[in-house]
Image (tube, rainbow, N blue to C red):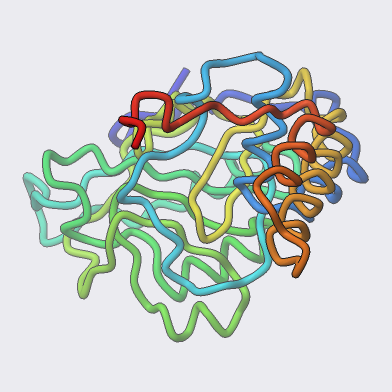
Length: 258
């Protein structure tokens, strides 16, 4: 049962037994998101236009190390004041929900407003609290703030925008599915992120991804080396593609011949 308004509830749990081995998680973290996306494609477990955030979500804290972790999900509103009083109750029960997820953790916050990002729910203080709770980053379609201070901690912010004020940002639900940048996320999903965006790593192939990513990377490095070689020619490049079982498509097939 989710937590809505001021009523208590229990978040969806993700048990440690569902997590991938730590060494696999560390190996996945070594690669950037394009490399992980390329590897996932080879296993044909989902369509190539699924499983990652769309343009608009970006890493706003700079070029810190890539993150990989299990997500705890939250939903917020930020634009309207409460029916009574000047602000919403500053609740802390959502911290316990985070600890139901195995570490390392990624906090995912969906701002459900028609125009997300009017107010920031996470800034310098929450970044430090979340870091103490074993979190490595926050992913939100809404806003964040306090960037200079957060950058100094190494904590990652992925957001739709930055904001001056927290306005009326408050949690009204947690432990439920959310949507961030076109990506549907369930509590406990394995996420990978860097300056390119966020993608979801399928559990069923997670252990095989590092080896596949290395294989693809080695092949790409051979192509790049050929392109930079003084001995480069199109014939040699095509021969290399054939040897790598990656015959390029004839993109100029429709071009008029001279």
